[in-house]
Image 1 (cartoon, helix red, strand yellow):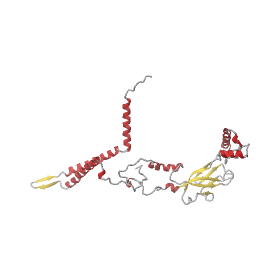
Image 2 (tube, one colour):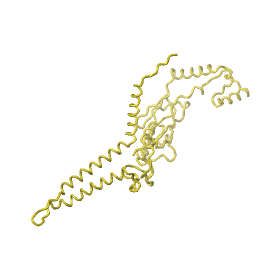
Image 3 (cartoon, helix red, strand yellow):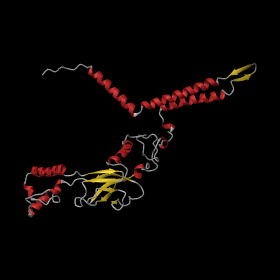
Image 4 (cartoon, helix red, strand yellow):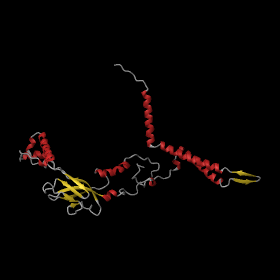
Length: 305
């Protein structure tokens, strides 16, 4: 069933080979991707909060400062999944006292793909480790001497650190989902296999059944016939004839037919269980282990170089 979930109900699966697939397992794990922000079947939307200088706490229910993505706003509740509130990278604070403005230096900067990062160009004549150490010094300075960029989200109120001063940032962006989208259990297409009741298996054509199956059907038919005949003969325990009575064996036939039917059904279940992929792999593993044990008892040759 795990391999059939989500398949179309319009095709006949009778006598068709069902290939193993990861579809069922992946679908079960899809919801974890939604919560982890790594995929899933719930749409992520983008919104923003307009900052005010010297104001640290903001109410996310205030429509005058919170902007949601077009088409996602409404009466439904939202849940914020990620807030983009990080310290600016050290490269934007890079100060080069030997700034050059030559066209050749600018062309070299563009050649390395750094044209949008820093106004300094002459530093390319210095070793790479000098640039890395300078960036590291900027980052350590921000971590030790300044307030860390973080936030605290409780209920519908968000507290930002450090306190906005009007110049460090004017907006904070975030990603969110609509709670109704996550709670909606009907995310897939219709007319798909959902449980055992709508798997498109049809009756097997009798002419295509092999000798083993035909033999089982004959034995089951005989047991069913005994049961039906037992019901008929059980209506009257004896039949009067001239000068005697004939005792019918309806009870014996009924008991024998029911016992044989139960035995045949149990036998069929056992055969099907032994033919499953799990049982075949377990038997193959046992066969390989037995073969390995036998090979270990064969004496090995001693090679003298």
